[in-house]
Image 1 (tube, one colour):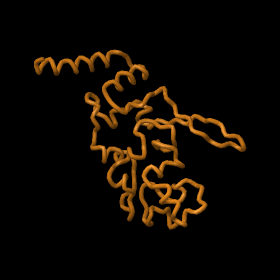
Image 2 (tube, rainbow, N blue to C red):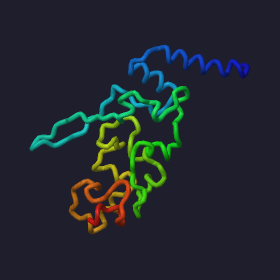
Image 3 (tube, one colour):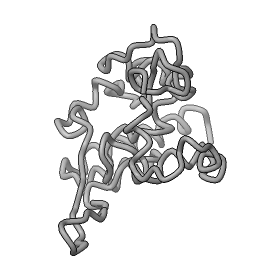
Image 4 (cartoon, one colour):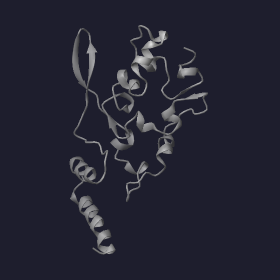
Length: 177
């Protein structure tokens, strides 16, 4: 196959995909064929919440505001779907984080927002990629954390005492806690 034909085939496929339709389900099928990580608009994640004595399922699903408003161009180039800024700078174009604090959480310092947050949608608060009560233990060993006597008997989420982004206090403690 000549180089010209090799260039025309993907172009033709993209053109067909764009003309196929604008419904979210159709867009998802087309985009997920070409790109990894495209969120399925029909999937909503169920999380459990306690109300009184009974535990019931509650659907919690939130979309990132630009994604929900179909403002893809705020993060992606229109014709290529490439990011409009390097990934480590992209979120800081809209989200203000105080990076002048003494202690910066590792993923924040390296621009790794996606380690903790989903860029499109999530079934968890703050667009987290996992349940808040289990979330920190993906990187911070639960056994190691529980060995620290300060954590004895603590049942609240980590962010009750620790700021997940930055702090002037060691261990990212909130305001001298």
